[in-house]
Image 1 (cartoon, rainbow, N blue to C red):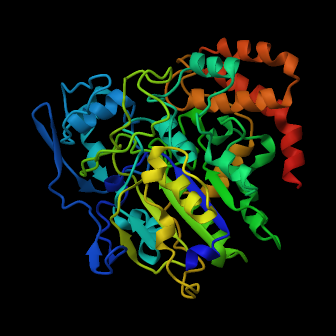
Image 2 (cartoon, rainbow, N blue to C red):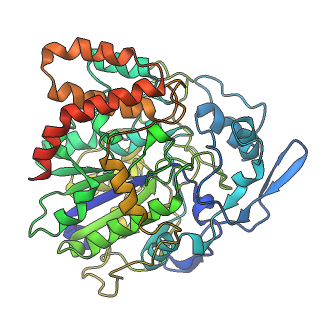
Image 3 (cartoon, one colour):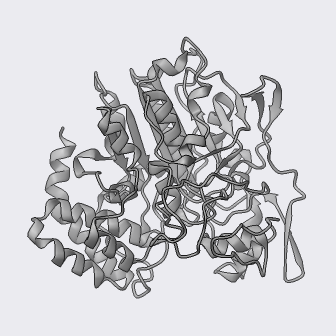
Length: 497
């Protein structure tokens, strides 16, 4: 079986896009990964709609490269999107009935009131040629869900630990300072990185920015992380001794994601397309292609419409609703909306469509299946594994060496993003606004852990106290630049290894 030949698993996780928003109008057809019959994706038919203030807003092809405003995606926002106006979640109870009626209302209640209908615009195939080429040549899954109906931070934790340790919201500066003052944010059963380490299985992390969110996890060190700009060159070496490779995009969170590659709604979607293209082509052109599996997915739906009703999920079982991290009493027994997912390997038949249910816990489930690891929680123990798709005994020889050009107005979107990420943060959008909210506290936690790693232990209380004082986005940016300068010598030493 092809699963026995996999030596390298690469995972690229981008930001905040729903399946329908990205691929709903793709019209993709192929072979059912389970039955072998002809099938098509569960996409849009064009009549799906939301109503708001007496107006009807239907889905339509042709989404903007950048959204004019960021759709909300905190727990309360998603509750409104999925269940409609007036819905409430009973702490510790069942999620309300879902009808997907509140997406436009949620967007309008935020910063999207001037043009609420843009929320229902979805990309056409010509706008995302890289994604469509990969979906046609390899496997597209149309039933991969965010692990919970909420924001980035808890959903990203599921990819690393099949749990968020009860976290059901975006943390605040005060919360991340409290975590570090105690023992750091931890999981009862550890992370997939801990499990791999115990078995002597190597890992490597690449970040488009200095502070990838994965570096906020306990047990992740600066020596584990390289800048994404080194990724292609690393794969050109004669050996590549890493079995699990996790890749994060650049976020440019200080400037509202403007120059990032994450595909956050305020970023140019083409920069993310360029990142996907570069990642695939680096692996495809390497000596390790025939022993590799690449999984590309998005952390959560970002407030964008998706017509599929999320189903019931298995709670991880490692925490209860009394967790200190749980502010909504959420039981983790409901998936979030769908996000795109692509499975890429020469050991998987081409042009498959996988309708089986997956979520971010499928990443640890896949690593557990390939490398004979025990499950971390009840969620990954029950999750689908991508390993079952690796059915070929010999690599396909007709896989494309390159992907189509990005449909971009920028001459070199990825190069531009790399240059932006390599420079100190020179400016910050909305400098006097609160540093709380969204991904910024998570980025600060990643920087804080790096700061603590390179500083004498006697300075630990003072460093945490310094972070507690951060109130504004300007102060957050100042701290990020301070840490960047402090860890620069370590980064430079890692870069030459």
